[in-house]
Image (tube, rainbow, N blue to C red):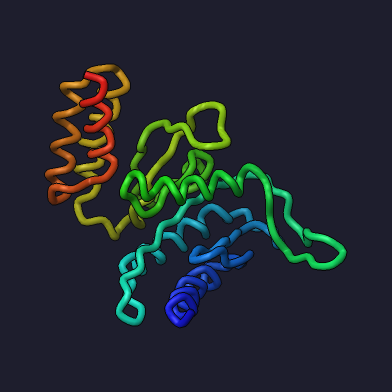
Length: 212
Protein backbone atom coordinates (compact mmCIF):
# COMPACT_ATOMS: atom_id res chain seq x y z
CA UNK A 1 0.00 0.00 0.00
CA UNK A 2 2.79 2.44 0.89
CA UNK A 3 4.71 1.62 -2.30
CA UNK A 4 1.67 2.15 -4.53
CA UNK A 5 0.64 5.33 -2.74
CA UNK A 6 4.11 6.81 -3.19
CA UNK A 7 4.28 5.71 -6.83
CA UNK A 8 0.80 7.03 -7.66
CA UNK A 9 1.68 10.30 -5.99
CA UNK A 10 4.58 10.88 -8.36
CA UNK A 11 2.91 9.65 -11.54
CA UNK A 12 -0.28 11.56 -10.77
CA UNK A 13 1.74 14.75 -10.33
CA UNK A 14 3.07 14.39 -13.90
CA UNK A 15 -0.46 13.94 -15.27
CA UNK A 16 -2.02 16.84 -13.38
CA UNK A 17 0.84 19.20 -14.26
CA UNK A 18 0.06 18.51 -17.93
CA UNK A 19 -3.66 19.24 -17.41
CA UNK A 20 -4.76 15.60 -17.50
CA UNK A 21 -7.71 14.05 -15.66
CA UNK A 22 -7.24 11.03 -13.42
CA UNK A 23 -10.13 8.72 -14.24
CA UNK A 24 -9.21 5.90 -11.87
CA UNK A 25 -6.47 3.70 -10.51
CA UNK A 26 -6.67 0.10 -11.71
CA UNK A 27 -4.40 -2.17 -9.72
CA UNK A 28 -0.95 -0.65 -10.24
CA UNK A 29 -2.04 1.29 -13.34
CA UNK A 30 -3.30 4.85 -13.81
CA UNK A 31 -6.15 5.53 -16.26
CA UNK A 32 -5.83 9.18 -17.34
CA UNK A 33 -7.41 11.22 -20.11
CA UNK A 34 -7.30 14.57 -21.91
CA UNK A 35 -10.12 16.23 -23.85
CA UNK A 36 -12.87 15.32 -21.37
CA UNK A 37 -14.62 16.44 -19.28
CA UNK A 38 -13.12 19.68 -20.67
CA UNK A 39 -12.49 19.99 -24.42
CA UNK A 40 -8.82 20.29 -25.30
CA UNK A 41 -7.69 20.53 -28.91
CA UNK A 42 -4.15 19.73 -27.77
CA UNK A 43 -5.10 16.56 -25.92
CA UNK A 44 -2.68 14.35 -27.88
CA UNK A 45 0.20 16.79 -27.36
CA UNK A 46 -0.44 17.01 -23.62
CA UNK A 47 -0.62 13.22 -23.32
CA UNK A 48 2.69 12.89 -25.18
CA UNK A 49 4.32 15.52 -22.96
CA UNK A 50 3.14 13.56 -19.93
CA UNK A 51 4.55 10.34 -21.35
CA UNK A 52 7.95 11.99 -21.77
CA UNK A 53 7.85 13.07 -18.13
CA UNK A 54 6.79 9.60 -17.04
CA UNK A 55 9.75 8.09 -18.90
CA UNK A 56 11.92 9.88 -16.36
CA UNK A 57 10.16 7.77 -13.73
CA UNK A 58 10.62 4.57 -15.72
CA UNK A 59 13.15 3.23 -13.26
CA UNK A 60 11.67 4.90 -10.21
CA UNK A 61 12.90 3.49 -6.90
CA UNK A 62 10.20 3.57 -4.24
CA UNK A 63 11.06 2.15 -0.81
CA UNK A 64 13.75 -0.05 -2.28
CA UNK A 65 11.55 -1.32 -5.13
CA UNK A 66 12.38 -0.44 -8.75
CA UNK A 67 9.15 0.32 -10.61
CA UNK A 68 8.99 0.54 -14.42
CA UNK A 69 6.41 2.81 -16.02
CA UNK A 70 4.88 1.80 -19.36
CA UNK A 71 2.46 4.00 -21.30
CA UNK A 72 -0.06 3.47 -24.09
CA UNK A 73 -1.69 6.49 -25.81
CA UNK A 74 -4.56 6.58 -28.27
CA UNK A 75 -6.88 9.33 -29.49
CA UNK A 76 -10.49 8.66 -30.40
CA UNK A 77 -14.13 8.89 -29.45
CA UNK A 78 -15.32 7.54 -26.10
CA UNK A 79 -18.43 7.54 -23.98
CA UNK A 80 -17.53 9.78 -21.03
CA UNK A 81 -19.67 10.70 -18.08
CA UNK A 82 -21.12 9.56 -14.78
CA UNK A 83 -21.73 5.88 -15.43
CA UNK A 84 -22.87 3.11 -13.13
CA UNK A 85 -26.13 2.33 -11.40
CA UNK A 86 -28.63 4.03 -9.13
CA UNK A 87 -26.63 2.61 -6.22
CA UNK A 88 -23.19 3.77 -7.26
CA UNK A 89 -21.65 5.63 -10.18
CA UNK A 90 -18.49 7.52 -11.01
CA UNK A 91 -17.01 9.56 -13.82
CA UNK A 92 -15.38 7.24 -16.33
CA UNK A 93 -14.82 6.52 -20.02
CA UNK A 94 -15.60 3.45 -22.07
CA UNK A 95 -15.22 2.50 -25.72
CA UNK A 96 -12.85 1.09 -28.30
CA UNK A 97 -10.41 3.99 -27.91
CA UNK A 98 -10.00 3.19 -24.21
CA UNK A 99 -9.49 -0.50 -24.91
CA UNK A 100 -6.92 0.21 -27.62
CA UNK A 101 -4.87 2.47 -25.32
CA UNK A 102 -4.82 -0.36 -22.79
CA UNK A 103 -3.67 -2.82 -25.46
CA UNK A 104 -0.82 -0.48 -26.39
CA UNK A 105 0.30 -0.28 -22.78
CA UNK A 106 0.37 -4.08 -22.56
CA UNK A 107 2.23 -4.40 -25.87
CA UNK A 108 5.16 -2.55 -24.32
CA UNK A 109 6.01 -5.67 -22.33
CA UNK A 110 6.10 -7.76 -25.51
CA UNK A 111 8.32 -5.29 -27.40
CA UNK A 112 10.43 -4.17 -24.41
CA UNK A 113 9.44 -0.55 -25.01
CA UNK A 114 8.17 2.13 -22.64
CA UNK A 115 5.76 4.37 -24.57
CA UNK A 116 3.65 3.22 -27.52
CA UNK A 117 1.29 5.51 -29.42
CA UNK A 118 -1.28 4.93 -32.12
CA UNK A 119 -1.07 6.44 -35.60
CA UNK A 120 -4.01 8.71 -34.66
CA UNK A 121 -1.82 10.25 -31.96
CA UNK A 122 1.27 10.38 -34.18
CA UNK A 123 -0.58 12.47 -36.77
CA UNK A 124 -1.36 15.12 -34.15
CA UNK A 125 2.13 15.55 -32.70
CA UNK A 126 4.03 17.30 -35.47
CA UNK A 127 7.83 17.39 -35.25
CA UNK A 128 8.31 18.10 -31.57
CA UNK A 129 9.09 14.52 -30.56
CA UNK A 130 11.48 11.73 -31.51
CA UNK A 131 9.28 8.89 -32.75
CA UNK A 132 9.97 5.68 -34.64
CA UNK A 133 7.49 3.62 -36.57
CA UNK A 134 7.34 0.01 -35.39
CA UNK A 135 5.10 -1.44 -38.10
CA UNK A 136 1.63 -2.95 -38.12
CA UNK A 137 0.42 -5.26 -35.37
CA UNK A 138 -2.68 -7.31 -34.67
CA UNK A 139 -4.13 -6.43 -31.29
CA UNK A 140 -7.11 -7.82 -29.45
CA UNK A 141 -10.35 -6.09 -30.39
CA UNK A 142 -9.13 -5.05 -33.87
CA UNK A 143 -10.07 -6.97 -37.01
CA UNK A 144 -7.16 -5.54 -38.99
CA UNK A 145 -3.56 -4.77 -38.20
CA UNK A 146 -2.90 -1.28 -36.86
CA UNK A 147 0.14 0.96 -37.27
CA UNK A 148 2.03 1.57 -34.03
CA UNK A 149 4.84 3.97 -33.12
CA UNK A 150 7.25 4.30 -30.22
CA UNK A 151 7.54 7.69 -28.53
CA UNK A 152 11.14 8.14 -27.35
CA UNK A 153 11.59 11.71 -26.16
CA UNK A 154 11.15 15.36 -27.01
CA UNK A 155 13.21 16.78 -29.84
CA UNK A 156 16.29 18.39 -28.35
CA UNK A 157 16.58 15.66 -25.71
CA UNK A 158 17.78 12.99 -28.12
CA UNK A 159 21.32 11.61 -27.85
CA UNK A 160 21.92 10.26 -31.32
CA UNK A 161 18.58 8.44 -31.51
CA UNK A 162 17.79 9.64 -35.01
CA UNK A 163 20.76 7.81 -36.52
CA UNK A 164 19.74 4.37 -35.29
CA UNK A 165 16.06 5.08 -35.93
CA UNK A 166 16.89 5.56 -39.61
CA UNK A 167 18.70 2.21 -39.59
CA UNK A 168 15.75 0.50 -37.89
CA UNK A 169 13.18 1.98 -40.26
CA UNK A 170 15.33 0.96 -43.24
CA UNK A 171 15.25 -2.57 -41.85
CA UNK A 172 11.49 -2.35 -41.35
CA UNK A 173 11.03 -1.35 -44.99
CA UNK A 174 13.19 -4.30 -46.07
CA UNK A 175 11.15 -6.65 -43.88
CA UNK A 176 7.91 -5.45 -45.44
CA UNK A 177 9.41 -6.00 -48.90
CA UNK A 178 10.40 -9.55 -48.00
CA UNK A 179 14.11 -8.74 -48.16
CA UNK A 180 14.92 -10.62 -44.98
CA UNK A 181 18.73 -10.66 -45.29
CA UNK A 182 18.85 -6.88 -45.60
CA UNK A 183 16.29 -6.51 -42.81
CA UNK A 184 18.37 -8.75 -40.52
CA UNK A 185 21.51 -6.70 -41.15
CA UNK A 186 19.73 -3.44 -40.33
CA UNK A 187 18.08 -4.80 -37.20
CA UNK A 188 21.39 -6.17 -35.93
CA UNK A 189 23.07 -2.85 -36.65
CA UNK A 190 20.32 -0.90 -34.86
CA UNK A 191 20.64 -3.19 -31.87
CA UNK A 192 24.42 -2.75 -31.74
CA UNK A 193 24.16 1.04 -31.94
CA UNK A 194 21.79 0.93 -28.96
CA UNK A 195 24.33 -0.92 -26.88
CA UNK A 196 23.44 -4.47 -27.86
CA UNK A 197 19.77 -4.40 -26.87
CA UNK A 198 16.65 -3.09 -28.61
CA UNK A 199 13.29 -4.76 -28.05
CA UNK A 200 11.64 -3.99 -31.43
CA UNK A 201 14.79 -4.94 -33.39
CA UNK A 202 14.97 -8.22 -31.49
CA UNK A 203 11.27 -8.79 -32.18
CA UNK A 204 11.86 -8.53 -35.93
CA UNK A 205 14.97 -10.68 -35.75
CA UNK A 206 12.83 -13.43 -34.21
CA UNK A 207 10.20 -12.94 -36.90
CA UNK A 208 12.84 -13.20 -39.63
CA UNK A 209 14.29 -16.36 -38.12
CA UNK A 210 10.82 -17.92 -38.04
CA UNK A 211 10.05 -16.98 -41.67
CA UNK A 212 13.30 -18.11 -43.24
